[in-house]
Image (tube, rainbow, N blue to C red):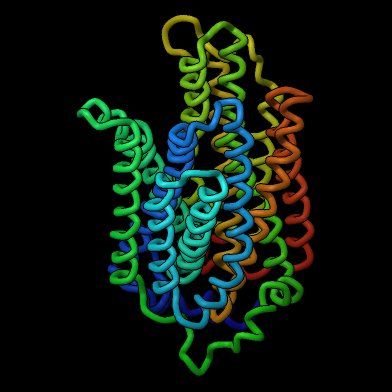
Length: 457
């Protein structure tokens, strides 16, 4: 374990504030904590509008429906490429000038992307605005992950991550329901044209990003965790993401966790809806009804994950962090492997509640497994990232996550077509199982310290 991490683990519980059941790292105020919770709510929530916004803009541009898939795929690729390029840069900036500045600028740039998005007149122009959105997104989301490492006291780190995850989920639900599903239709009913309604909705979302940027700047802690004279030089920071993984097997393990955890989230969001919609259409449903039934599968998984988070967060603080990864990745593997047991003929009811008990149990297990993988990965990287290089190390963690998305979507899409709906999920379940095995090896060779708790085992 690095010296910085050791100092944090040994001192945080003695010097930090306690807010409710959460212990904070030294120097973190209640204002900083509440600003972080708002950032967890707003950043993750507002980024989800891009899916709805993209569908609206592509329709407004007159791109045929049968070309939406390819266009959306290109836009996703642009986002991921931009983020991969951004994560390293913003990590260095965060370690040199501070988290709040990077988070605030990132949210502002994301807002600019949303503001310009509905005015695109061609796909190449839309790609430029998507790159702007991706750059802001990379900065803002990268800082949310870094703030977890900065703000959480080790004694309640898992609980801290779990509470942040709950705010993430509430933000996603809020933005999806208010802005994604209802804003534009309500404006059309009020007499605006579809294009006007689309642009106004984007302006509102952009305004929320600008407002959030101000909140971040005013509420998050100023500066970096270390004093100015302690900050590593830029040249050292540029290679720290690599060198820290070489020197600390637990950081290397966290990168593998990041590869799996972010692809978990994308597979869950993409292929549950697609699978459910495909099955419903094959059973005679129209496209609108089918997409709604597919969304219900995602809703069941998402709701279960939110309900499971507090329970899992409460128990993981009692375990060594690598042991926690073993538990979480095993749960993730089991949840994803459960999709092999789905019987498509028993996925939906014809009457009553549209999902069968069979579907609810299996997709609930999927949601629990997905959030477990997210929690284990986030706890480990936040505990191990060294204080003076956290921005860079968390940035590398996010880069591995972006690569994981590329791999999972590319291979998973092919498996969906060749094997069936369960294919992408079994693939990610295999990824989770491999990381669990790697974690067992790291636990034996380099277990690291226990959380600051007498009950840690």
